[in-house]
Image: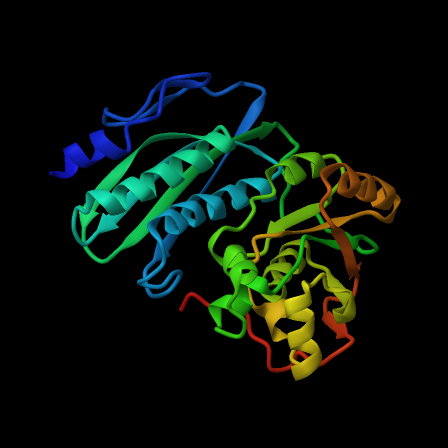
Length: 306
């Protein structure tokens, strides 16, 4: 089986539809974009030995590769539409590819996002996905809108994925959070008239909230004891007094967003309607400092790519 047979057999399941004139099989895909919408796009790469281990299941690799890109779309408050796949594999293994393809297809179908092309090549295993979404003009959430007095919220819980990645607690729950994060697409869309800034937590709350502060030219005060954590993470923090896992661990793919105090009731309504915890952990300040209370984080460092 060669490269083109691989594409035909495993990655030609996308069909034409709304906004998609031409998909897999040509030099470029052809997209029709709504004039009332802005296109948002992002790309993430997962590399064996860095983002996943050699024994990670192909279906989990596929799921996470698309999920982390969907999370970027969620952070913009956008609707995912299309994605491309660049797959580097050491050999053509039909069984591995079948499991990878089925998982990728299932997740793409659940979010109605279509595979429109890509590339395959031989080499050390890594997966790159570029994703495209759309959002009504002027409504895209960004990192630069936080203002003094805004409240800081976190969706879901922090730290479980880092617990599994670091080998601190490996069970079905922590592995699920590491290998199959939940893209908060609906939450992002509901936040467009509410939030002043938003980011997805990929490298850790410390670093990613820091991006909001830098882009918005503000500071913050947060309370570590308010960080949303599972029982596994709480038990670890209680026994070790180490806050680094939930504060800087990364791989959470939850949304961190800011909103005016006047919007707090609306945030609580969204939380109830989506059955998703949205926890206030602090406040944006004029003083350009990252202030933390409730514990020591002096030795905490978020993930660095280099």
